[in-house]
Length: 297
Image (cartoon, rainbow, N blue to C red; front, side, top):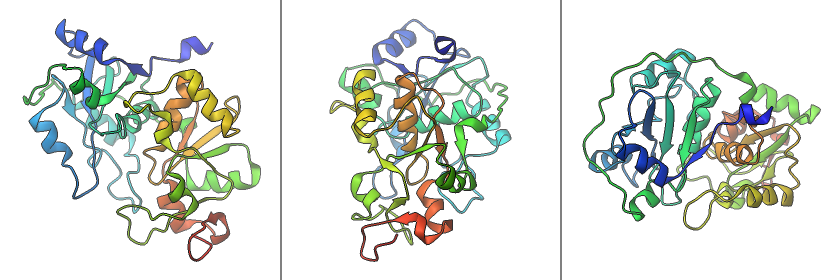
């Protein structure tokens, strides 16, 4: 049954370069640059306009989100997502390949991979090694913007891959799901501040396990092997045969947990979209754990 469910979550730089060289880009294969950087550091759209994978469109995660939400990077509506990706030339029959330009090799690409999946689209992959390795290996780049023909995309929210504040709160009692937080250890413990955050202390949801997303990547920026990933989950006593919710600060690096589990044959990891950004502002004080100066986040 599993082999029917799992689509290839990763494609290699070599595979994509060959697909571009042989003219495969088009309605059946679209590439997205999903780069995003903290304000005041790098400018994602500017870098895209300077150089990107030939044929790639810029996926602006600031535009494709619920801009009315008080929380960070929340999912857009079904209609909003469908309209946005349709304008990028993506239909329900398109194989979508996502990358970003982060120095780690991958940062925001798994979030967009998960977004497509949560809206019912299964033929989506992350470029393994990201733009960092695309450049390192000498593959072609262009400054020419992509202007794909608009397509019709129908989005259907898969609620099994998405968890809300209320569901995570209920889970503290029922413990039906394991809860994994993908932030760095210092932010998880509350000993380091949340970057670029005003009024948001660090810390974690009571009962969650810390698995920093950087641990899923090699030093060269590639995803670790399924065997290495399984060992990481085992070390943290996370049972991949049982239900799992991933969380982080704003539902972005949590998607690295979902991707890593997917590569281990577990495609059903749910992401708490509001993550710590929402939890800190809404949850009872006793459910917020921190080693910071106040003892509570």
